[in-house]
Length: 119
Image 1 (tube, one colour):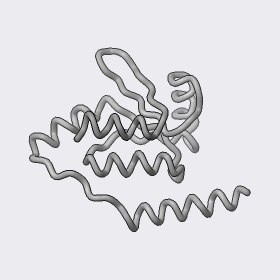
Image 2: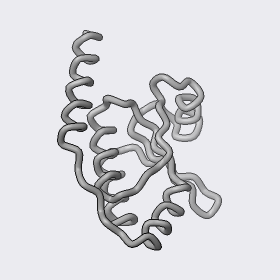
Image 3: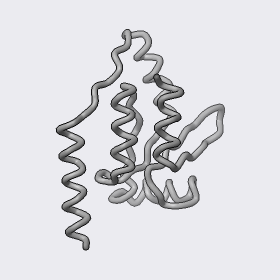
Image 4: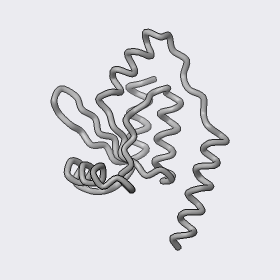
């Protein structure tokens, strides 16, 4: 079973690489604003998780880059996710705004958030 998951994960990553979406073109000034807003976000994820791939593809479409934190292989990131969000479930977007931290878990909710705030 472990081999099957590993193999399917590699297929997902290959297809993601081959059919990678194009990003939004912005002026340098607009992209700088987006980058500044993105600094307060972090995405906890597993590399080959299909829902994480969905979120990363949406990030690429919106030309936004968050700090990607691997909660599968990095024990510190895994502990941060469990302590802050309450459970180890990916993808999870950590949003720091006005001194408060919000943890968003569902991939569809994260994609909607990206389209609303970074489009």
